[in-house]
Amino acid sequence: MTFKQSFRNWRQYRNTCNELYRMTDRELGDIGISRSEIPFVARQAVR
Image (tube, rainbow, N blue to C red; front, side, top):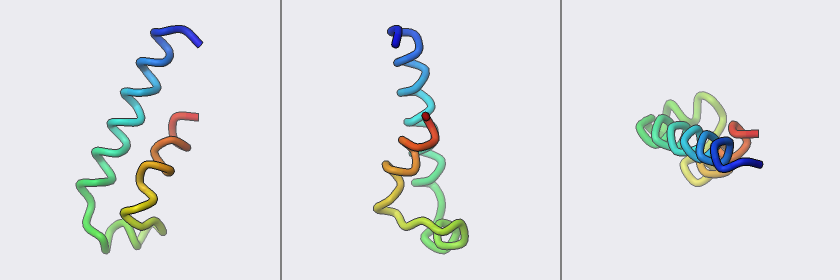
């Protein structure tokens, strides 16, 4: 993986985390995840 691709993946991971952390617990529950699962879900989004 190139540096450019690694940076894109990291940026997508951070953007996903930020979006999910801005959601309320109720909104997160509606989509079936808990606050503690956010990093895992964000990592899956990068793949």
